[in-house]
Length: 208
Picture 1 (cartoon, rainbow, N blue to C red):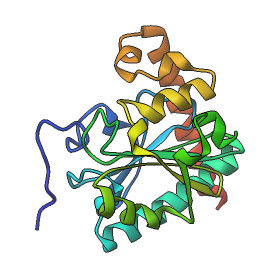
Picture 2 (tube, rainbow, N blue to C red):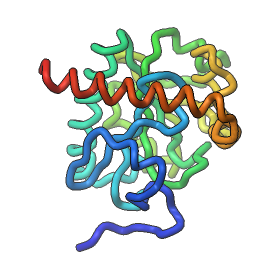
Picture 3 (cartoon, one colour):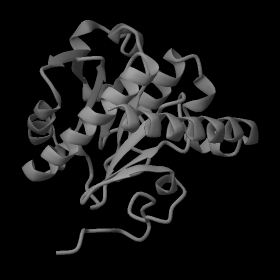
């Protein structure tokens, strides 16, 4: 059975700019450098099938995803000293194809979600995202190091996590990827960063 794809989706098209920055490919996933990185080391884990979000992965697909997530979390943590992740589970997506963000970030959850603490629900790991998706058909999830949280979906707006992480990282100008794409200086910086990530990934593989 061929993977479900959509010709109008940039994450389905293997020739798209986003997928040209590939670090690793498996049977059902690609791991790529974000073309519009919030910071050096910003990666995306993307299923080849046109699936809405991580919460919609089958059990088999999630197992394959989790192996990649653990591998690249180690890479980012060892290389940059910290790791975080986020995904807009349908809410706040600007590309409607699952893509889990993994990036260097060290800070407090309150920096990302300064609203009342009742807007955050601590979860054990990403396996609990499927339950949240079953309950609501949507979710917002992020992590810092080994801590994971679901966020009240009423807060969700387009680029929800991108804008908040961009601000926390000191790069608010990178939050809106569409505007960043039109900024030649930022895109030149991004190109340099992506080249560095590829070099560091090769070194990481050699030293494993």
